[in-house]
Image 1 (cartoon, rainbow, N blue to C red):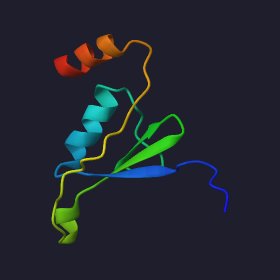
Image 2 (image 1 turned 90 degrees about the horizontal axis):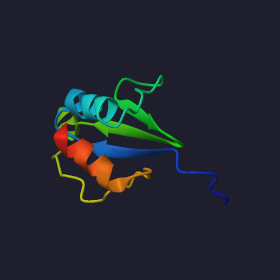
Image 3 (image 1 turned 90 degrees about the vertical axis):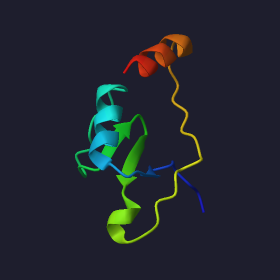
Image 4 (image 1 turned 180 degrees about the horizontal axis):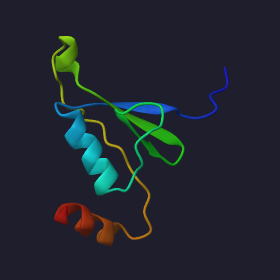
Length: 82
């Protein structure tokens, strides 16, 4: 098997609209044309799902997602101010 790239990462949330708005407004990631519960990062789709809406238990994601930016300190300040 040869993996070409990571296609998407599923992110659990209790409020998809709020999560999408934050990623869109703060990180300026566009909403995916494939679905309203997804945003696009360069080379990767973040898919937000609400497990409780499907009768499953919500468990916060303890795995991080790392974004590369030109100035980490400025990006942290901007994210905290949002």
